Length: 436
Image 1 (cartoon, rainbow, N blue to C red):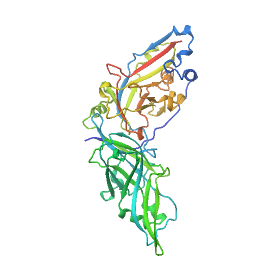
Image 2 (cartoon, one colour):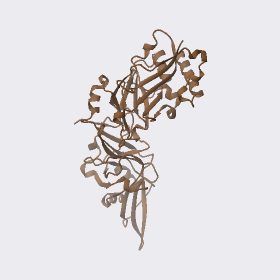
Image 3 (tube, rainbow, N blue to C red):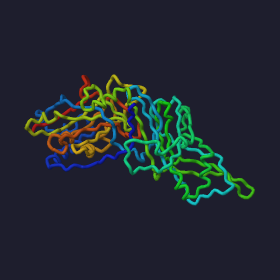
Image 4 (cartoon, helix red, strand yellow):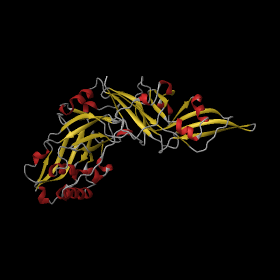
């Protein structure tokens, strides 16, 4: 069995040095974009003098190379959402999510006297959203971890045994998410025995001994949904209700252990592609001739796109790209009502030195306008500046585009798209250009 497990790896963002000609092309593209932002189908074209329109060339027949690879690009550290759950997709196999998190004292110099005893200890987690079928029961395991969460080291896989043992399991909680109704708060009762240890801790002893929690799905079950947990919400915490005596009077009160932005957090994803088409596609790599490619969030898989024939349209002449659109279409054979396609896709550039760069169009347009939304079963990216750079500059020679799910480490969507080899609706670069 081959199980790919992904955790953390930062990708570098570098801004290449551009030649003056390329800078001019970028400036022209910027002007075209500003004045055409409300006419996406005519970006740049409406500014061309009518007489020049006669010289405008169009091409959408360039062959593009595309294939599927494992995703090891995005960091899973301290994200806005933490994911827990699993699903078994007939195309993408079994996927599971969990997370590590610290928790902190809500105030210093807390003291529990000898008369104090615990009434309850509850882990509260706010559900922000979900992916999949929430009518299926889910079992969440909560572990006490024995070491600090190391977010400084870049892990390629998560070794559960480094953090927990079988004796570290605090509790298992089974519930059906859909039965919570409008209540977005998951409340997991933790054992009194676990809570009692905190009564005897000083502030320093708490810091030394309370390393955090590992919250994950029961490995022997498939829940068919992934929950998006907002740990940094003020309602996400550990709530200790206890009673103490003030003379002859008993007083019941609460003490909160906080999970906030100061706490180290780590999303953990596992993907088992055994027996799926993806497994063989990964093995073939750039030699794949499959008619589809695969994209999955939670650091699953990405699609690589290359443009080996782009410079063939130049043929020793200068051209100016007026508009370049990269069109990626979901495969009709793989559309699923059970597993929603990615709402957006993201593109970064992998250059010849294996460095990750923002596409220049991203730097010009920004994330909101560059990352393509799923509309009419397709994703369309404006790649004008990048395409011009491929033709007129050596900055992007032998570079590749990495196409991934947007919000990759805080969402669970996936999509199967037509490849550069597809007989219909293949990945396409639509070019409008002038010969100079």
